[in-house]
Length: 115
Length: 115
Figure 1 (cartoon, rainbow over the protein chains, first blue to last red):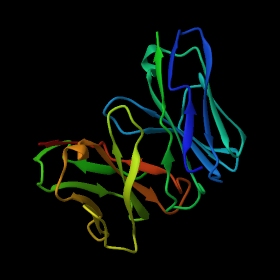
Figure 2 (tube, chains in turn cyan, blue; figure 1 turned 135 degrees about the vertical axis):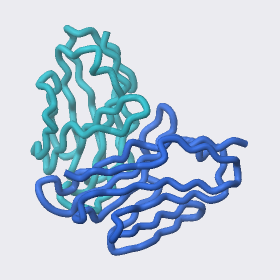
Figure 3 (spheres, rainbow over the protein chains, first blue to last red; figure 1 turned 135 degrees about the horizontal axis):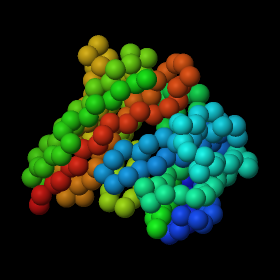
Figure 4 (cartoon, helix red, strand yellow; figure 1 turned 90 degrees about the vertical axis):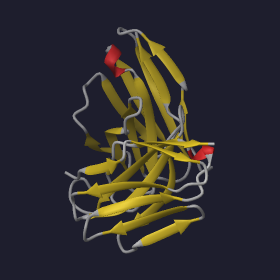
């Protein structure tokens, strides 16, 4: 398996809802990433997990809560989001986080709309 | 941190012509430079990358050049086809320090190839 998968593909939620985004890879990668991407903008890094431990948090609001249950899975828990949080949420993985030249592979993303 | 500038923001070419997208970076410790292609509604896909110990790399119609002294790198697409139309992002990865492994993206170039 040489892909990063994400579910769901689309998500619509109200500002009081709680939902979760899921990401999975079976390439043996030990680094996993969450990005947020607005239309026609580059991906913005949110979190980096290395060996299932959070290594980078880019000052993301606490309404976004990441979780890495094991080396293949990455979740992003959402609570009390704002309409401006509507975006494409991309998961990515690479062999290692600490190696500068590891290729980073992106999942297809979850298109999130907050009403 | 690293700062990556990308130009132009939009580029229109006739089918069969060449397209060139240029990026500059600020941190001399950056040592890995990937290029991603993102079609509308799809994930960013790695199309080519170059490491700092190499000056040029080619893969069929796509080539990347790196000038470490001037801190710039470029993507060259020859014999463009309508399916090359997409947003292209350059990125740089720093090879040391607390941000080791993190990708810094350019702002993107919307390439349109007219038939």
